[in-house]
Image 1 (spheres, rainbow, N blue to C red):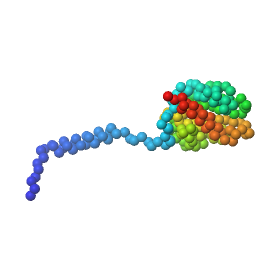
Image 2: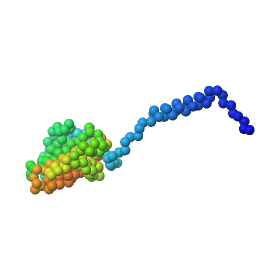
Image 3: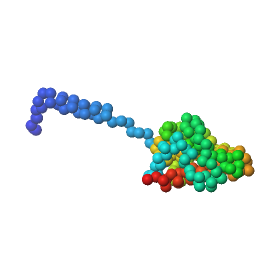
Image 4: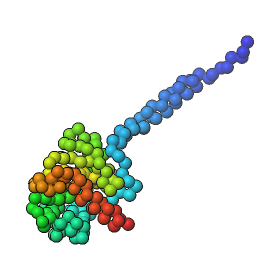
Length: 190
């Protein structure tokens, strides 16, 4: 017969209470895991475009704008809660480029989370940065490109003349315009 072990009174109860306390504390302190990321990851070099939220016309140089037949530095005006810059080429009044920097809506991930409510939502990459096309229809397209976790570069192209290439493929033109901005700002980054 095996010897019996005597446990002093209350010792088993204390061990059980201690175990319950530790398990309870562990359950209270762990936060639920964050939801999985829906948007593609950003490049390792996010762009800080916050200085352009109030001055989006400074996103491109005169030499870059000339490639789009734009001779002036653009006109800034409030639009949808932010400041947007509008450029009109000198050779036609039937085409406009509009750009703004959005630091308030939650970035690209927020767009992906509400993608069911974004008209024409279509994933795209612009100069290696993930983004989306929206409002894609004859003569108009908006590309919203994630350049940092909380920052979007928004570019809209609107063409009213069906003879213009930008009328039949406005997203190509929006991507090209945004790509020049991103490449320039990426090269300026420290």
